[in-house]
Length: 419
Image (cartoon, rainbow, N blue to C red; front, side, top):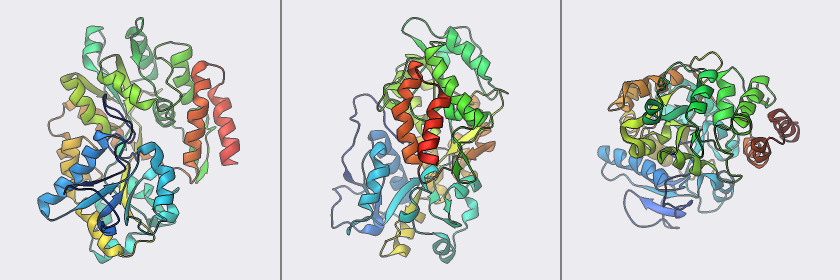
């Protein structure tokens, strides 16, 4: 999303960037001009999330890289914002003129089971070796024993930070080892008046869940929700406490809090924010050489990544699956994934392209992301995950106000959604 997942995935799987509206046009023709419509070829039309220019730039990067190999390659993009995608995709893909291609996060593949066609036989028929893609992400894209999407990234949640603020504060820069105690001490040192040590969003999978994951927790066990896993509860409560008890972050807005948090980091107003590598280039553009990356803080200080990622799938009702699969293969070759990893900062789903991703990036930033990626587990959820995320966003305000605990909130969601 991605997540990751995602994702991508997409390089902001959600939103951001000052001056840009929350939603881009619902349809545009990328890579060849014009606008999409009923005359578009379904096998070269991708339904995806397009929240803003950052998302659009990522999809365009795939198209441009594919055109290097085939100048006649075209791909039409269509879709709403990331937040709306997970509900609108089900309606759009059931229509008579539905696109043949769609994106999914590994975390949502279970949820989109009915929409995604199995790809194993198509890959075998095309002579494609699926083992070249990240094993964890292929596992995340597998539903009912069949692969439903080809992953283009495999991205661990990471801690982005402003090196200049750390240096000016006389603090040691975090890196591939970072404990929760160190993180909290740093956040306190970097908080003064209206300037906070970090920004927090109300997204379930960001700081609290990632810390719980790093400490050995899991929100899903054997295909069933386990939101009351003690480590997940502790991680979410730690996130609430950063606002209510330690006062090193301000409470996120109840709705669409992620863009504001991202902007706070890019504007230099906060020192830290936990996000995915799909945001690397946007943060690098804003902070330049001051952009730092560290592992997610944990009790032990060791790296353990919560990996999100996204991929391209084929609609289960596609009239020409072979043609649609050809479009997917054009944008998921090692060369294309490496080119997008280099230009947009997304951590690649193909191991051979990790060096391409690392090219031009500071060694310490590369080391942190790589450590999390190499010691990580994909976030694989349940068909009800969208409801879980929606309920958490609704109740999170109470957690950040201190009126309810993480145990109470997660327990209520577990009872309502997980049975």
